[in-house]
Length: 131
Image (cartoon, rainbow, N blue to C red; front, side, top):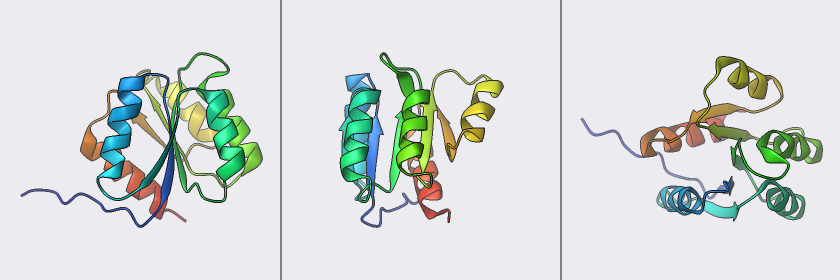
């Protein structure tokens, strides 16, 4: 049985990753179901985009390990702008303490890198649908 790909409902996602290949791949994956995608290649750019467009952005998919201020501080800044922001943290580091920490600090979900297409789409849809 083939699992159906969850469709977007005109939502907008801010995808943040310092690896260009992952950024492009993630964008292609998320465009397929119909999401609108903004991309940022570092935390500072992500914060600038979120400040300008936070009323349009429904979800942030955020790499945790990046140069500059990094994903954790980026997440904290986004949550200062909008405490209800929905954020999925992505990282190759799956230390259970780290995962618990980012969830306690306000992330709604965590995805391990490298992510699988189905997992990314499922977690995105699940997170968007949460109240």
